[in-house]
Amino acid sequence: MQASKEKLLWMYEKMVEIRHYEETMATVYLEGKLPPNIQKGLAFDIGSGPVPGEMHLAAGQEPVAVGICAHLKQEDTVVGTHRPHHFAIAKGVPLNPMTAEMFGKVTGLGKGKGGHMHLFDPAHKFSCSGIIGASLPPACGAGLAAKKMGRDWVAVAFFGEGAANQGSVHESLNLAALWNLPVIFVCEDNKWAISVPKDHATSIDWVADRAPAYGMPGIKVAHNDALEVYEAVAPAIARARAGQGPSLIEVKTDRYLGHFQGDPEIYRPKDEVANLRKNDPIPKLAAQLKKGGQMSEAEDAAIVARAKQRVADAFAFARESAYPAPQDALQNVFA
Image (cartoon, rainbow, N blue to C red; front, side, top):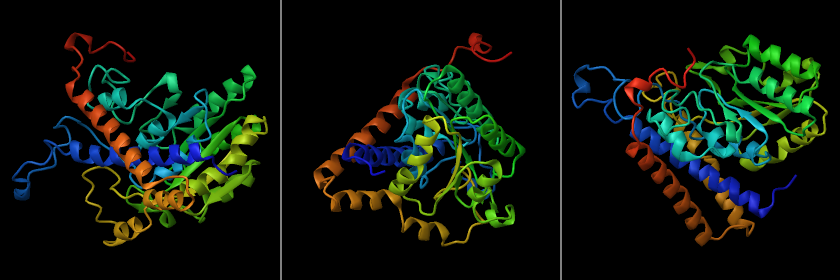
């Protein structure tokens, strides 16, 4: 399935927006966490600065999110991982409340009480979780609901190759096939489960090869390329909407940053990231669009400017928003 010019430009703009968002967050997150005399042995202070707590960023993994979400409607459900921003942005979650949530502000999606691994937006049917492998069961629930209501909605569960051996993953794949649910399971394979390489934890090269054991198609995307993802996932989306059940997709992608911000990354070969960046999917897509006549240099510049402005506005909104009132500490949380 070839994408229209409008869809191609949407994918490119979203990828630019995601990358700029993640790079901006990488800088902002470090504010207050690195004291001037850290060289003297003072620890990285994870609780300080405007964005406290852990932070997992997805620079480099944009093609997985946009290539799949380009097929989705607002009524479709997406359940992300602990590294969720690219999925949220591609699904249409507004940047202002999403960013405010990470800053712990009352204008956030969860009124500042969830943080970056617990982004919930019912209006755009997006959620995520800090628990490894936790995305699949809720997606099965959303798929079951759509089926019982007779809607052609689909649910997408993203998970990493490090989660592929969790019991929740196997149970969900089995259940979705057994009940013929409209769920797309997407393994985002960046080759690293925190600091463990895939070949140290998984006995096969492709998680998608497990699909036939559950009675569903397995689809492999070998390159970190938005167009390849878009074209490969189209049959799975169509199949799910037609009531023909789930599919398992695996995309080989690249993680440019650490597992978390502050990760010393001593487990990675020193030249790995530099080599990965030589195949950066964003300039690659830009070059494809220009060569194909779908985007001019002027359009490219305008797209980048718009994306950067949206990100700047979101961070300004988050900084300027108020913190929750102390007396509201127990409001809007599970007790």
